[in-house]
Image (cartoon, rainbow, N blue to C red; front, side, top):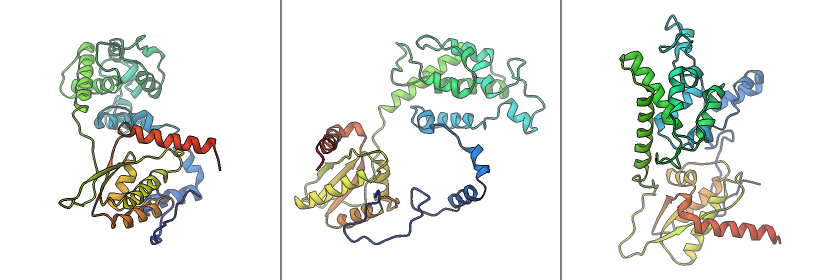
Length: 322
């Protein structure tokens, strides 16, 4: 029921249903076979974490995201990991006599405690109440930064983790020692510098290789869909309906904007998705009827009016079913 077939006679296509792109990969096939034949091997490797909310959607630099990802997978080369791999003879922390584990380095070492004590967050940050890195990370992300630091909509936690790791490496490899005060100042400065740089970045756009003809007026069409989250075809249906309506209005030079980056990328890159293969086929066939057509990504905040109309239409449909 979720698959929407083509209305314009789009050709059928072989699609690998076990991957979102519809493309077959040996990797996906391997894990399917492993799960089917050896389910007991797959169970211990299931991570019950929301990676998007914990890492990928958190406002921070890609470099720090990779650092946090390594920490959460236990892949950071701290003392205990290096000793287990027989790289160093001892896992002793460079600042104290304790074994250097991930939780020790970032929350339990006396140096880390001094850094967290200086963090300007509401209510302070208590390292003695942190037992695991995940617990400390989530608690740090939820701690609001006090003014006048200037990080109202941004957590300082990622930069503190990065600063502690950098200070540790500089002490080991370059014999350069930084105090807790210098470490927290660096974290705050790096966080503010990154946040200020975000306001200067332009919104990325994806366009098909069409050029407007001279003398044609270019129109912009913004579309949005307010369907259930599990129905990924909603945005595609909205784009297809908008294109048909534009042709009915005899508009031949149009820029279509959507807040669905995967959909725009699929149209531009000529890729496929299992549930919307038919819709993508229709969009490409209808595109031939335009003199110039392009598809761009637009953030949700730029489509507030269109989103409100879609929500109202959905609400009216639910309240007044036919």
